[in-house]
Length: 87
Image (cartoon, rainbow, N blue to C red; front, side):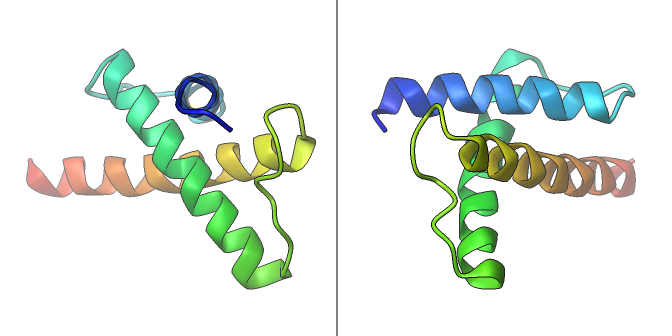
């Protein structure tokens, strides 16, 4: 996938993760994109380590979206924990 596809996937995965975990989050669209992109990478890595599959196959593959959303949810939880601890 190209860089634009990663950014688009990250944006959409981050938005879906925020919709699945409602609540007040600091940060705007840039934080959402970064969480989504990092979540996609994390989800792909976890899929490869745990299940032994290449879960980042292509933009329109279901496994890519599931990996990106699950990874984004994990990072969103961690982000919220760190933000709460910093207060």
